[in-house]
Image 1: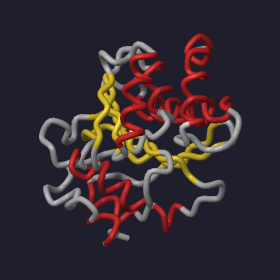
Image 2: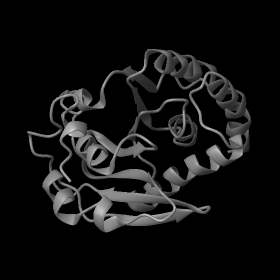
Image 3: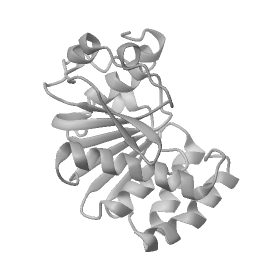
Image 4: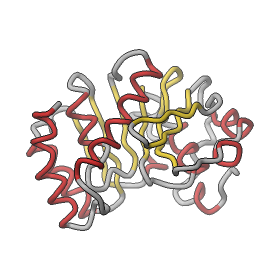
Length: 211
């Protein structure tokens, strides 16, 4: 993993210079991204074969996961043209372009596309959207038996962020909290198929969240 980190550092520095990555040491971003992998592997009992990273932005955690899960195929989703262009260049620099697809567009639309609908073992989301929005969109992407892993604030309130009834409506089981290196994550297991009506049309989940 040290070799992967060495390769990632300059890429993430470039992401920061372009305004796609937030403040803080690069090592902290790498450690936080590794937490997504640990949480997903623990929940699945294995590395995934397919994963999707929502709102990949400057490449965290998506690029970290792609380098760690060397046998997995990944999809990075971002609605911004400049960010998507950067991500395509980054996958080439890191030699993962053959197994990582960058999709420029809205994740709601992806969740309704038969090519991507309910095919991913893992969906990850770091600073992507509010919990209800993230869960609704991911419900259309994660296969039954897979998991959604979301970064959480320092003092999360699971009852309000991840209500059991709301998750059940989307096909998710109860949220399981996970900590890694001082960071917090919510792991949501997909236990039933997503109802056909979800995710709703582009923009709808954010304008009228389910909870």
